[in-house]
Image 1 (cartoon, rainbow, N blue to C red):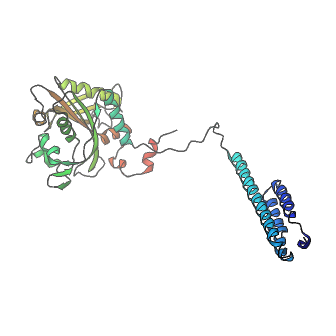
Image 2: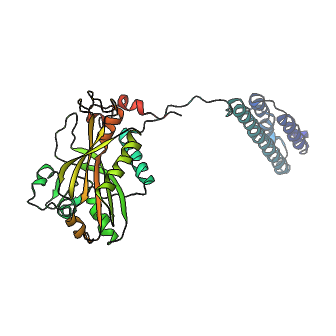
Image 3: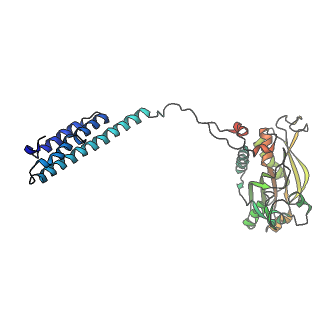
Length: 351
């Protein structure tokens, strides 16, 4: 290009030609070739820029402006076409990789619901259907609620089995969920009826063996109303046992002692494996002990603001690990807490 005889309008022709060729570039390789042809070090417009000095001084400004305008136009056409080609490539790739959601998928293995959680949820569901509410209480508890308001004064021998993890002189990790019944009664301020279950973790100084743990889970149950009797307690526990273990389940009540209930009973269920005939699961007795219960002690009612001459109630406490071991055939309570995924595998949720 001889700029000594060059008309500045020639730059417009070059830019128009470049723009048309760039617009028809089939791919980025072709586009890059056109960029080099027009804007590269030895490109048409680059060479023209070097030869501007051949023009007379008075013509250089106009030629320089025309050259710069052509350069910017070609550069803009290049950027636009490159963006369009990349967008088209992305669209094609996405179309090729598009998932057909109508095809049956291969299910990803889901996690396992822990058997302790399963039992808690099942127990809650049964009692919710019986008209109970689910409440919770603190795991770090005052001695006042954990013992004294449950008719267990400081010198009571029942404390020997439960004096456990103290954080201060009168503060400890609760040893049972029974403090929740006291807190609930106090919160109700004498209101009736009271029907609650309270699940939660409890702590005791205990042996760590196949059937004992220093940490375990309980569900406390409490009913207070006018005219509540031991027969109501038995009927409620029978309904629960049949809902949890099966329709053919039977229960029996044996006399026992708890400071916060009077009378108190231990509750057994007929062995789910042998139906009561006797086997290794029930130690050939036909029965399996599952929980303790009784009528709420008058002193507990009175201390919570209820008149034991007018109202009565029953309470029960069941061990969740005990129920889970019976229901799922677990022989060692420590299996629930080791975190071994092989133990949890049978409880995996399937999609």
